[in-house]
Image (cartoon, helix red, strand yellow):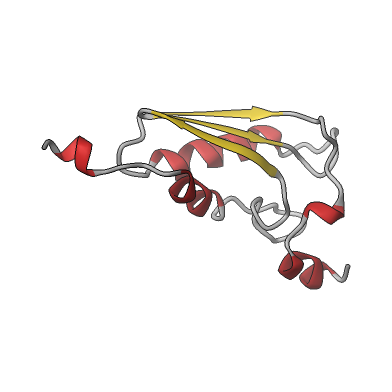
Length: 105
């Protein structure tokens, strides 16, 4: 078995890496904030569907670059494809309980 076959990349690995992507205004990670909608691993390609807290938020390009950096550092990843969507719109109910507590919801 080659080394590539021994390293099986999972969606959980990707989600863990995405916890390093921090919203600079809120100071919490994108996963806890409920901003990561979907993660798909296809061979060595990773597809991440995410949103922002509001459509005019200026951090979209920065977030895409951080996703490429953190997920791209995982063993077995050859390309990261972030996709920003605004449907469904984000709402505070999508946050984890810890994030809600941290932000006073």
